[in-house]
Image (cartoon, rainbow, N blue to C red; front, top):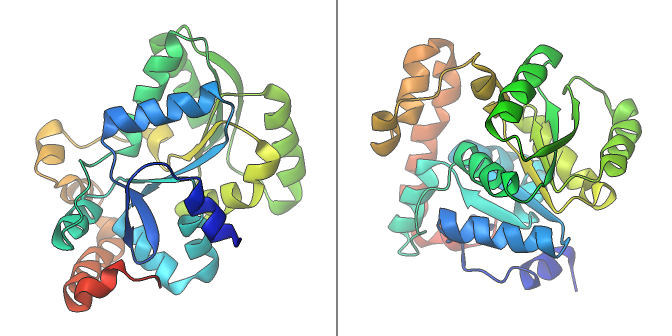
Length: 258
């Protein structure tokens, strides 16, 4: 059995294959319940919070695509993914935002004494995020923190430190191009029940970046709010209309493996 086939065999939840990437159809409550079971069973799950930008990068970069397509769980974080699933008549239950999923898991873990490791961002940001999360979730055991500025030569030591800490949850906040391939490469050695890339979440938690107001999130305009706040993102945001045009052009081929 190939790695991809074995991975698919372990997914006991409904998915929609968007360009071969298996996006979960579960809602937030079902997703949290699924990950609770994984922690209770000590069954490692590499979780990706997927969006259109990641899909487009994956279609150009085989290594990044492999990291996405072989993940244990890919949740539909981007509203463009929700739209795509609806368009191909295989709708997901709802958008499962990574930032919200992080907090939902911490809320559950707060009452269960779960261990959490925070990896990523600058030392100042990860320290501030740690302090704020510790105050918000006093029942969580924060078993380790480390900034995300390390090289491939440091990987062995970073992985060893995380393994020694034995967390139930590992949240990795690095750049998109680094966090997903890094987790894919080291998931087996890390052996953590829930390993999840959370991008800029530590910046939001630390208060360095403001999250979009609820109204923008409800209207699926979080991307627009970020653009208003950070106009330098303009070039990066161009991937969204390109993705939409590609989905329209490809039609049912969206459901075919890359």
